Image (tube, rainbow, N blue to C red; front, side, top):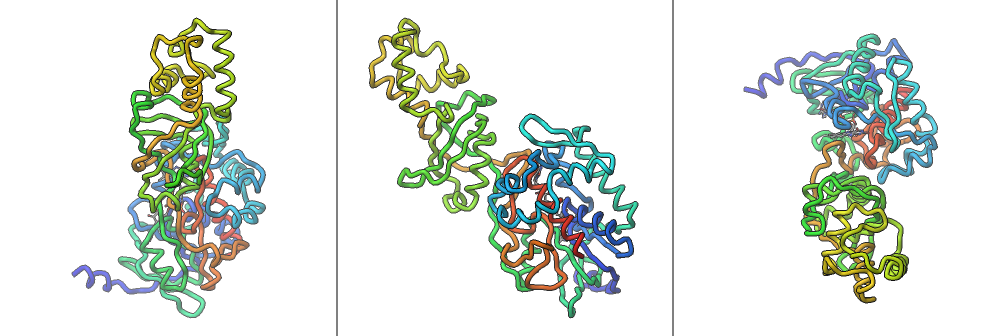
Length: 416
Ligand SMILES: Cc1cc2nc3c(=O)[nH]c(=O)nc-3n(C[C@H](O)[C@H](O)[C@H](O)COP(=O)(O)OP(=O)(O)OC[C@H]3O[C@@H](n4cnc5c(N)ncnc54)[C@H](O)[C@@H]3O)c2cc1C
């Protein structure tokens, strides 16, 4: 019965450009394309009953639009997949352009201490309202409940079949995010798809040293070890202890750079944490020897050193087996050595991952070798363009993933 209904309405609707996907990249492409060439008939096809759903929930509902990094090379460094390919495009459209683009449309962005940029309203609805106003003003047609099921190449044009209609388009833009069904259709058109794995997740760690400390954050350096104990990845930054384990930029960056490496391990591996960030074990040991002289009567357990949060210090001291009443003067060389090791090279076991609720993405998608990054057009199939996360491009957390959507969408729009 359903099949019969699907086939009933087979009239063909025409457009110059059909954009598949009503997300960040789809809207940005449509608005810029309509501005560049107002005569083009542009349609956005969205499978859901609402558009821009990810924008809505992004950045904890505040939408982290971009990141205050103004050098193309530095900006590109935040993309574990796409660094090389995005460098050229960033010379055409990057952070400063994003800020101007929104400002011209009445949306002012602000910079937070860590470089993340949000609308001053602190509401993602501001971005959504801006996009909806712009598409309406420019006559872009936005059609909901139109899940594209089939992409047929007809000479240099396309016929798209959705659950209820068919569309003829001279050019199409695929802006469907990480959607396996569309990747399958693209494979049928001859594209290679890099298999998807999650990126941007937190590490599950159950360990007495951190179990009662959720909410505590400190600058740390973290290494991922292979089965032989060799360091395979390393990053530093704020490390946040959570109810389930570890999060914060230090961990999220590892999850992004290690997305491909950690998936086959089923997210079970060892990490080494230096709670003192860049201080070496030797330096810490020397400081302890000094403390033996200068603070000899003080108990080790009671006063945190190196500015570490007190409860974390005490957990680490306990884990080294130091008696709570032991003073610096009483501590043997071996005890001090063990404590220095615990603080700078403690090993923790990771048993799985959890979703980072503020932002997560998928690594994988259209193979970058098959895309011309001057235009974001397919090298395999003429008049087929890509924007956003459908490509095998993803970034660390901080507004970089949306910047990819804005940059690719803008460049596609100039080249349609
Ligand atoms: C919870 C969360 C918070 C995030 N916060 C941030 C943040 O603050 N800053 C940041 O930079 N990044 C953030 N991200 C990542 C960011 O949202 C994505 O990188 C970005 O949305 C990608 O945009 P896109 O348009 O490529 O894909 P999407 O936003 O996923 O949009 C794709 C659209 O295509 C539609 N679609 C899919 N298949 C079809 C089909 N067959 N037919 C028709 N339509 C289809 C989908 O329904 C969807 O609306 C967050 C992600 C999540 C999940």
